[in-house]
Length: 94
Image 1 (cartoon, rainbow, N blue to C red):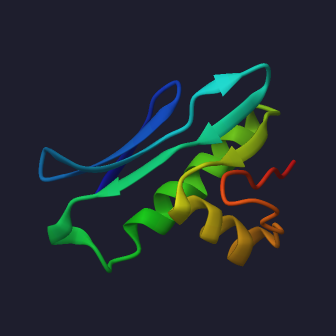
Image 2 (cartoon, one colour; image 1 turned 45 degrees about the horizontal axis):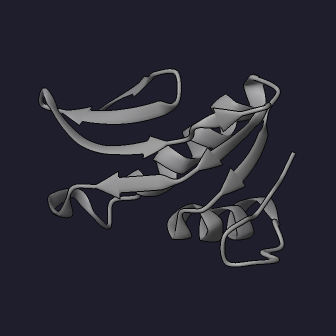
């Protein structure tokens, strides 16, 4: 599998086919992880977690703040970064 980072999206490719993505639009230095998707055939293999991990790493390398509106990303941030979820739509970390 190959992960390709674009400006505000990371895609995962397997055998030439895009099988998943995470998107994180930016406004004023804050990136919001708003969508995580993995094709049904590939679920349960840790791909979504890897996509969110790579997105957070990319955002931090850019010096941005991370927020999430995607439920999967919210849970990932809580479990892996100790982020306290204070509302159902936002989990800011820096």
